[in-house]
Image (cartoon, rainbow, N blue to C red; front, side):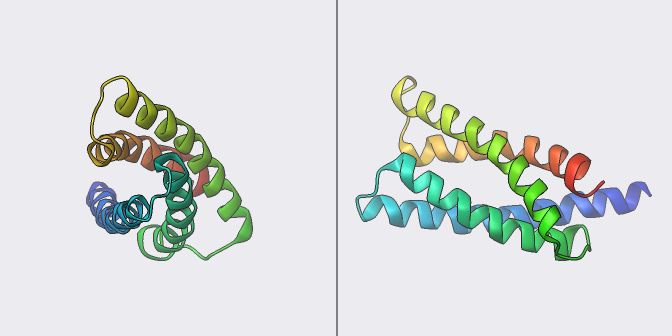
Length: 124
């Protein structure tokens, strides 16, 4: 059981890492097109939730896609989005970090919160 749990966490991190990399690239592209960084973050959030739900459901948790699970998954990610936006704003405006660096730091923090909530709420 412990081995399976460890394997699942590793796969979650790989899938999440790929999804995060895709989102960071999209975030960067949005910034290059002059889109406000907070709006870019929201757009990336929507893309990331949909892609993340599909990948986590099918690959990590080996479950079937269901609309009810997508709603739970989206709810978890809405709370993490709030955390993400607040942290991003604070790091950019008060810590005066570069927007990309601030997004990377924020993403690392939110990743841990997401795994715990998804496992406990969506795929229990």
